[in-house]
Amino acid sequence: MSQHTLEGRTEKEVLWFQRRSFLQAAAAWTAMGGFGGAIAQQRSNIVELRGDAMVNGQRLTPQQYIQTGDNIETGPDSTLTFVVGTTSFLVRQNTRMVVERGPTLNAVSVLRMLTGAVASVWGRGQTRQIITPTLTAGIRGTGVYTEVFPEQSYRSYFCNCYGTVDMSASGDRTVSRSDYHQSFWGEAEPKNGRMLTPARAINHTDEELEFLAKLVDQRTAWEILGRKGVKDGQGYMDQQPAGMHPAMQAPQR
Image (cartoon, rainbow, N blue to C red; front, top):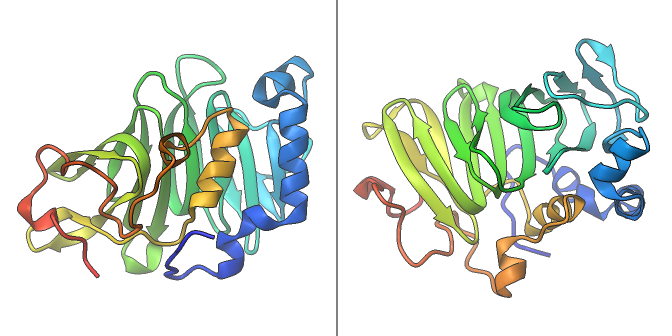
């Protein structure tokens, strides 16, 4: 079990991947050919739905197909795992989001998060974005965790678990390159003059990213490298990202 720090989330939420129902659903998804198999067999692209979720204002059923352009909302004690093209999503409870359409029906261009939390793995391809009320992340092919805190004026948390991400919050910008978790806050109000500030690694685990990667026939960077760093939010990197402000050199504790 990887070390993880919880802020406003429960152990049960973060350890969703250990449930027998999910393990069975994930095995069935892979055995039936993943997303390509779902398209060919005209099956749902939902790997697992627990609890209540809404799509475009209507209750979602496990047999339905989630399309780009859909508005998704999960209820209390609910989780939703689904795949669109080369992107897999785990949506935690009380989340509101939109998956905007890219160049094709089965390509996501933007994950627009209004509130809640989503872990996601994105295959390589054209640049896509995750947009929250306080930050924007340009995704090139990576595994990430994003959470919006409405009780903190929609302050947003973003972890580049692995890959390269173009980060911006108001006028602050940096390029994050990480093999093992580099985290940021998109602030609601300037903090020491900055809107993009360093963060600890919170509310997500290595294992859930590994499972999401497997759903789209990938492996995480640490699985490929056969090594992990220290999960403190600084990332396992040879150097800090280009353009990193000096105030961002050490994560806040």
